[in-house]
Image (cartoon, rainbow over all chains, first blue to last red; front, side, top):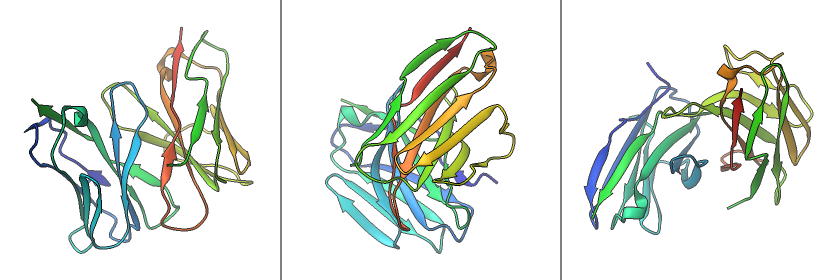
Length: 111
Length: 116
């Protein structure tokens, strides 16, 4: 089992709709969870960071964490074409403070 | 967000030579820096984790003698690819994190290394 799993996509969502991205992780003791956006050929940029169970909202983005289910998600409201990118889920494990990435989900917002 | 500066952004080198990549945290003290490698259409693979003043912890399968990591100060870490070969061509990205638990990790711009 991979440490951090994401559906590779592509996920196609119409402009203005809600995009829902999901991620599961294997280390039950994981502490911190990150969502990054990466455009082709560029470095990842941090979108959201969450470490407590529940929802965390920042503008159009909402991260949801459920540690019991080992599941973290990212919702993007009012999706825009500029949101088209690969979204990477990253998890800090319970040991060694290392941050491990999922394989990423390609999101495509169609006008 | 915090600023992490990585240089150079692109480098082409001859096979057998060494290349040094710098990663600097510009507006915070980075107690931990991570080095990743990303091949085309693949995710980021963690190469090593370094804490200021101590030796880097390398992931399984990463040769510590080939990828030399130095984290001599709270604002600078370097990755040196020694005796580079074409298969080392990749996108190398550093990430830096500050003090305390539950803090964000910010990325540098990445370095596109091409070994010819």
